[in-house]
Image 1 (cartoon, rainbow, N blue to C red):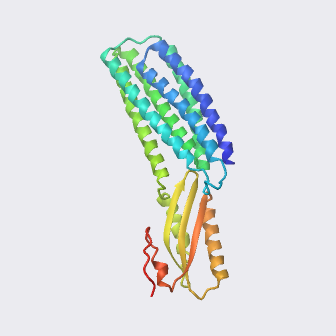
Image 2: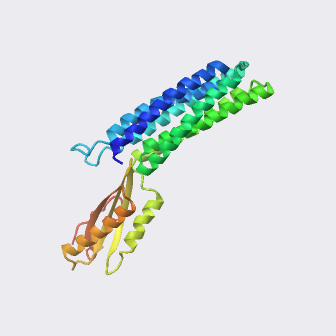
Length: 305
């Protein structure tokens, strides 16, 4: 799938957010439940996040240019980070509303139709979340993955709010509703902080997951024969792209063609295992001591004899 095609899923998220805002707001006005109010508030956050996701996916789909020779993939981290920040703000506002309602409890009304409307909105979010998750993980889009995670959090929030409303109707204990609102706020806050953390790690060029690094190491180890060695393996994630670099040490008696053929073979194997990867290799003679000076992150330069 072309990266530009991912924007259609952002449009789906926007449409779903508008629909669920209307449904959940209606459910709140019917029942007066602070739990459903918190649910509606999160849907507003969903809409803002979906709009930012559309912008980020549009930027990330741009090809590399003179100013961005590695592409624009990191734009997706700004989207997921912004979404995480919005979730944190929403969690705080929900918590404040729940505390105020706990201090001034009010009876709930029209519980049956209100929860039915909220339930319909929840089913819409569940369907869109599953779609975004499938496409996001298939295409390696952190923006769509974040959107799916956010919507699934919204589904849990909605389910909790509906349970809270029914609990109040069965027991007559109005304090249950704001307590549920506080629990929802805590859940949303945790999800938001997780998204912010993941986005920050991506912007800081965090290494690939250990599972991906193990794949690369296994491929390199299979070629360690005939005096061939490897070192300085480094990696980073940039949105959907994975970047891998390493040095290949070969006997100095090898021809340039021999070294080139080995590098081509290794790069093809890594790319087959990690299709979204960009690979950088550096060929060095194993007999030269200078070849071992750059195994650390900061290369030490010593005067040669």
